[in-house]
Image 1 (cartoon, rainbow, N blue to C red):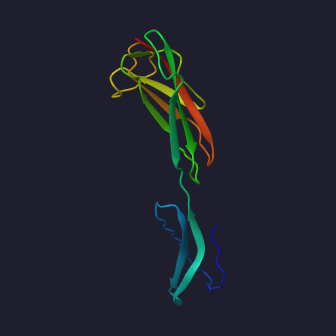
Image 2 (image 1 turned 90 degrees about the vertical axis):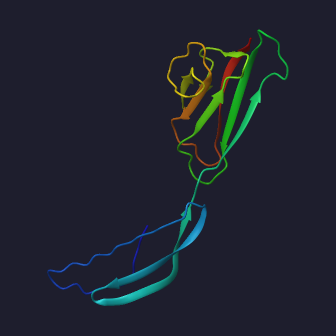
Image 3 (image 1 turned 45 degrees about the vertical axis):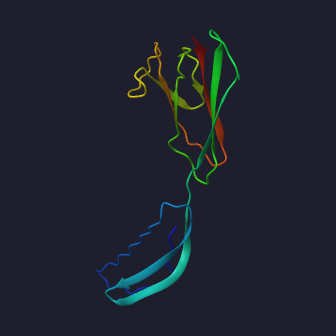
Length: 162
């Protein structure tokens, strides 16, 4: 929100143009806004720091778990990845990429995640599509909605030990 106090005399048939520009770094924090005003009928006016510009950003934390500490061939394992936005800005592009562990096979239709578009790779993660036929080597979960600050969600999938 920009505002300005002051007045200018604008002759009939003339115009006045005010240009505002704000540049902020990519690092979270609060930064003062400095203003310089100049024009054809006014001198250069510099102000000290005025309104603060607040830069926010998401910060994701991930935690992965499996439901069994030991298993045998034929057992089904469930992997879960919980992700939390610990930052102070919305996370708009959340991707969770998972490798299917060696000596296991992905269980068709087991990948789950709220607001997630799920894709499957058959070539070690080089390309992805919607085909779940074996062998699935990697999974891609792409969130389709914003994850606000403080929010947490998870994805999961099952594999069978060969």
